[in-house]
Length: 503
RNA sequence: UCCCCGAUAGCUCAACUGGUAGAGCGAGCGGCUGUUAACCGCUAGGUUGUAGGUUCGAGCCCUACUCGGGGAGCCA
Image (cartoon, rainbow, N blue to C red):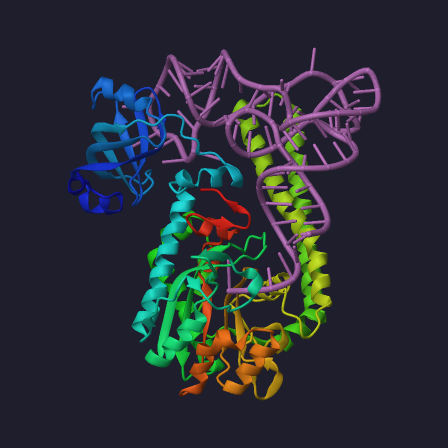
């Protein structure tokens, strides 16, 4: 069946020729004697034009009543036409309904988040999800390609794990034949041992965090890639990270331009994502947050938001007045009603941001040296920059035991976060690892961890320890940033969120 | 764990300070040869999340619960 069908995304090779397509009915419009069937086949959309008289009358009638997402094959002549979605359309001569669909729940109109997640198995077919999935595919491919082409060896780390990388409380516990084990929250400790064998390695797979975080940046199951490099320092890691992220973005721009356009991503800004990225220390960030600059920035943003709110409110009032005026054509009323729904949605969004602005400003102003940066602090810093920002040298007390202490300033560690621009926040966290046996042992004890559990990890510092480090990049956050998607739950096919798993 | 917001037709949303619930989309029928979330006409579709309370009267006010959204802490 397959090899006789042509893929929609290769139609330009068949201009003027007769081909058969196999796919699903995405949408259809019709008038008395002509029908437009938009068919999706997984590679793209194609408008198929059915004219009465050019197909059997019986078929014409069947196609007219064919429900959304019915599967079918169509035969016809390919022709270029500007008016068509992909630039090519099919003049249909015949069609065969494979399976008629009736009452498909996801209509071409707007739907709520909850509804769509409950229909995730079907929502994957929708344009926006389809585009995001393709971008994700490119990102995952770029991740592998970057490391494979730069001398890294893939190391698959275990999902069932005996050790704690970050924080005990954020682990999912599983009953492993009567013994408690955890689902991995990082492959880093394992990958460190592999780096001492191969030099440059990476692991790539799902990661599990039981954090009770209900935000647009969190999933309990997400994908993370973690490179680890022997004989490197903080500067080396930053360079690796900025080259890596820039490569990912460039690959998406090469392969997914039409997807980015369809979903309205900001490609002009993506074009500028090239090394070097901004570099700030935690201490610098702290003084920015506490200082005049952040205050002015936040106040300016608040003003902008208020302006925006005013404009939205004016527009809404305008439309409402128009609605009251009466004596309108039906289509005009509909347009206004649709417009109002959109405006009210935008207004709600702006209002939340206005509500949050002073809270975030206060949190920033109250920044205390020694605390970890909050999500809102990162948002502010990332909003203040048009390119990704590295934040380095965090206070030791706020960070994990394995991060190497800066010998020039014992209060900080040689770590970094990478904040994506325009408010997307953290997409990478990484560090140079403590390679000194005694210091590491001390840190393990300081954090109240059991040194016995980390015996093998300590061994790495016993037998030929070298300066080394790495980082973890969150795939979904990267997808969200690049696609401009507000919530990372749209950036993984089947999201797992705190207390909520739909299908 | 805490704070804010919400729940009305299959879906997305209206209903000004309490007065018998309305649109659009979707569905069904009819019309239209170039539509782009097509359009036009008609039809069907509701115990307003649940349980109480206030009131002559509750979608609207009060209490509790359930579910959902956003955010804080924490993080990729």
